[in-house]
Image (cartoon, rainbow, N blue to C red; front, side, top):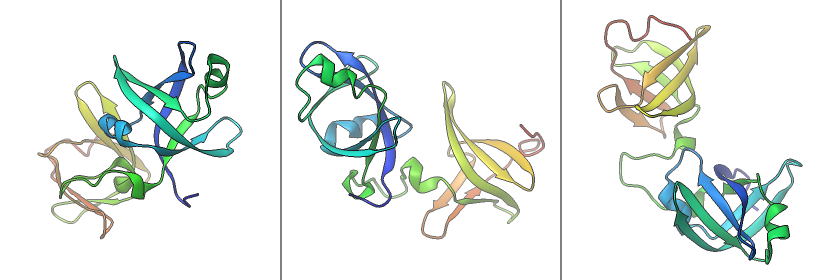
Length: 173
């Protein structure tokens, strides 16, 4: 069992009579859910259960998954609401300059001029694009997660460099 599995998605309600469940990716790349087989399910009891996805197929806004050993609707209903965790080493490799959400959380955020802004606590997905929730100095700020604002991400150095515009850092949440 991996030491630091990352949250990748969540199981929804049962679908049909053969044990399928609806699933959604949470904040990561939904298309990578199709490539996962070995996962960990964590329910309300916080007990981790290693499992295997036998199949993953797209269905509307999410996916339908079939889990090894789950043969009927009753078995599927018992897993509804479980978090889907994965070992980071099982995730597909990304292109240079691309990062998974979990690789960015906790990184220090600094302006191009060297001003310390805080630490990236959360990435909020909105219809207009992502927002970086940065906490530091007793303040919370939202920075658009767009190329014109996020200049560089260096996970190895633990640093995100942002470009600001007038007023961007003036408002607190």
